[in-house]
Length: 47
Image (cartoon, rainbow, N blue to C red; front, side, top):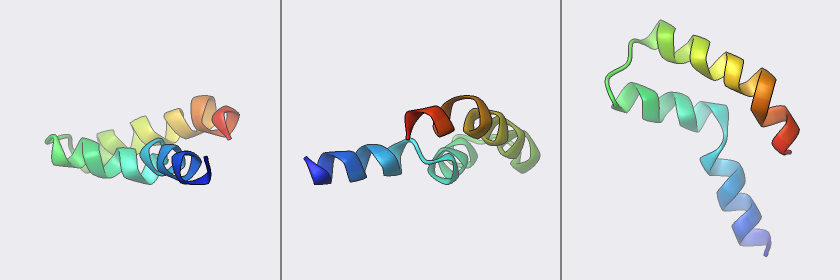
C-alpha cells in the first residue's frame, strides 16, 4: 500500500505535472501558471 501511495504522490506532484506539460510542448510560463493553480486548488486537498 505504501508503494501505491508514493506512486500516486509522485504522479500528481505539481513539479511532475510541470515536466510532463513541458514535454508536451507548452511554454514554460504557461506550464508554471497551470501548475501553480493546480497546486493551490487541487493538490493540497489530495494530500
